Structure formats: structure tokens, C-alpha cells
Length: 564
Ligand code: GLU
Image 1 (tube, rainbow, N blue to C red):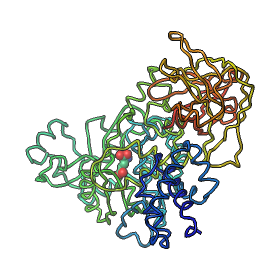
Image 2: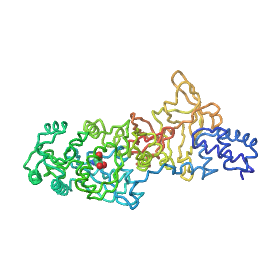
Image 3: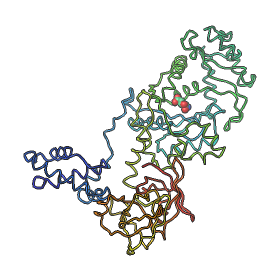
Image 4: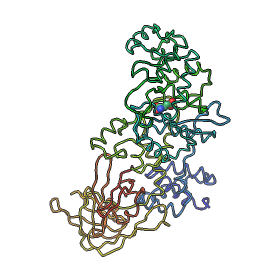
């Protein structure tokens, strides 16, 4: 027991701490942890504190990989605990009126594939439906033919499948035009809307001046007749608009008699080529939230003005208003998000496609090896607060690392390789673990037959010794800028004493060409042959970072950089 052997408790504590934080802990932290878990040692404080220094020194003498291997062997449960999901994430706040289940929706416009900005609404609504039970509707909002990309219908569905949302039903608004037309008839009939044939500019001037346009007072019968005329194509684009009667004295001019239906003669809608009367989003959103029984709407703050407009429509119909939550803005830097900019870049050949590594689409993240769970977890961690924030890629990467680190196999990738023939070295087969925390996964065998590939960046004139990981030490002698290499024994202690970097390497005779695409550009190099068997998987290139193996061919391997 620890009482008899405080040293081993201290050692394991220091080891776990070092593996967790990537550095050797302070004595105080280790003593505190051990005293907390082993109160019987409190009476032996002096002895414990002396032993703590020894234990920490032993941990410090181990390499990072050795620490992991040791912790795995000596205290597997403490090792696994490091990867346990952190359940202490603050839960999402309760939604009022959700006790008996919810009906929620995710309502993207099919103008391109989904990007990281969409993921917040998608993930939050999904999480609430899971929490309270109910229905989760995917509503494709395609009533603006100018903003429809025919390919996006399928892309959006693929992206949702990838994210793993539990969608219970899907509706497409362009299939629902007859519902909207019927409801418009009803709204006009209730005196809640009128058909306005004023010139748009003239209407704007009147609106600014809080003055009713001549159409506002039209009798209901006239409004209904004009509406039928609209539907019969008796007006052309711009000649007639349906407006909601709101409050001409509303301090915000954007609330005054806003439009809800318009005529568009072009472009033709890709799904409904004969359509020309379209609801504007405030109408179709209200109609569908009502018709589909949506109980709770979670959307961004940029919709607050729409919520105010939409209330006028609810009031005219006498419908119950759903519960709204508007989360704050989320600035996202470092990737291209604008659909039009992305499309232009793809058309111009600047980007290779919607999954180009420089774009913020979900498919680009998938291609980089970001898992959908990481995206959802990162979004749930951000939550529904209304403070504006900037999206942290580091948090997303940290979420992803929790998922990929325990499963990713380790391999050597040598960027910018230099061939080194090592004088005096015996032939040797190196065994390197596929995963430092899981010996059962086995080893990669790398045969040293005289020459290796080494990363050029590690071979600088001031470097006189390197250790080839899992192999041996190498001395470097420099003739000007040209190094020569000589075997320098197997002792890890020697390498440590010489402060030699422990570097990745490859047997020259079996290295496979490998290109690594990063957001900063392309790295060329070579990797182990076994990487060929990891197509579509995330692996760790030791000392470089996690990567997703994107393509394997006769010519070699192409990988996408995920994160450090
Ligand atoms: N289609 C709208 C959008 O993508 C969402 C509408 C809503 O959430 O009410 O901005």
C-alpha cells in the first residue's frame, strides 16, 4: 500500500501529472495530490517531501514517450483517466416550456455546403432535441431563387449526415408554395396584409416619413383580387408586393409594413421553374414554424429584427409564438466562409473544391481529419450565450485531439529529407510502437541497412549529435555545410547528456514519398510504407502533428494536416 511505499505513489502521481501537462510538475503539486489521496501519509510530511524530489527527478529523466509507456504499464487506469471525456462541461441552460418535449428545426439556405458557422445552430438544436425528446426538422429554405445552388440540396444533407444530427423529418420550402399562398390569402382576408403596387423607391420615402402608401387602405376584396392577379402573373417583377400591416410609427423603419411576397421573373427556380411569386423569409419561416409545430427556435442574434417582424405576422393570425433564443455573434477567422467568395475561388481554380483545406466548410474540416463529434462538442461548449465571441480553433483542435489521440497510430514522416549514410552502424531492425499508450496494438518494424532519411531542419551546423528515435545515436561532423554521420552507440542516457534531439527517421531503402498539405502550404517528404494502409484515417506523424491520410497511390501518399 501507499502507506508503506510513499515513493511509488509519488512517482505515479508525478508521472500522471507529467503526461497530462507535458512537463515535469512542481514538488508542491505532487505532494498535495498524494496527501489528498493518501491521508495516512500526512504524519510523514518531511519524508514525503524528500521522496517527492526523488520521484520527480526520476520522471524528469524519462523521455515523453517513456513516461507514457510507463504510466500505461504501471497504472493503466490513471492513463485512461487522462482521456476520459470531461463531463464537467457546463450543460446548456434549460429551455422554458420544454418539459413535455420539443419540436425544433435547423433551417439552412441551400446556397452552398454547410460551414463551421452553421454548425452552431445545427448542434445546439440537436442537443436540445436529444435532451428533451421530440422532433428535429431539417428545413431547406430555398424560396430565394437567386441564392439557390442546385448542388447544395445534396451537399447540405451529406453535411448533416456527417455531423450526425438526429433529424426526424426534412421539408423543402419550394415544395410548400401552395401552403404559403393559401396563408397569404388568409392574412389579406384578416386585414393583416395588402398588395402594394407602389414604386419601391416611392414606398421607401413614404415609409421613412411614416406615411401610409395609397394601397394600405385598399378594401380586403381589392387586396384579395390583386393577390389572385399576382398569382395569375398579371404583374411583372417589381410591380406588386404583399406587405404586412405593422405600425407606421414603429421607431425602426425596417419594421414598417415590411414585404412578405414578391414577384421574381428570373432566375428560374431550379426545383420549381414555373414559380414567380415567392414568399420572403419572414413569411415562410413563420408559416412553417407554425404549420410544423415548432416549439423552440434557437438562432443567431442577427435574426432578432426578424423575430420582431415575425411577431406581427403571428399576431395577425392569432397563433402562438414559439420560444426564441438568440445566441451572440461568432467571429471566425483564418478560413474563407463567404459562399460567393468560395464559389468564385473554386471557379477560378484558386481552391480545389468545397473541401479545400483553406475553406471553413464542414467538408474541408472532415478532409483535414476533424471529427464531427469535435465540431459538436466545440459548439456545445460555446453554448447559446448572447455575448459576441470569436471562435477558437484551438478549442476545436483540443476537442478533436481528445478523440483522435487515443486512436491514431503513430508513424514517421520526414519533411524535406536528407539521405544520411551512417558509418560504423550495425544493421538493426527498430521496433517502434504504433501507439505509445497501447502496447497491444503492436509495433512497426523499420530495418536499418546503412542509410536513413533525416529531416533537413534538424541538421544544422551547430548540431553534433542526434538520436534516431527507437534506433540509436548518431554523431555529426561538419565539413563546411556538409555533415557526415557516424554511429554513436545505443545509450539513451548518452543522448540525454548530450542534449541530442530525438528525431524521426526512415530507412532510405523503403521510404514512401509523402506530401503533407497544411493551410500554410505544402510540405514534401517521405513516410513509412505502412502509412499506405491508413487511407482515410487520422494518424500522428511523430513530432509533426496529426494528419488525415487523404490519398494513397503508386506515387506515394498525400496527407492533410489536422493539428498539432
Ligand atoms: N434560413 C435562415 C438562415 O439560414 C434561418 C431562418 C431561421 O432560423 O429562422 O439564416
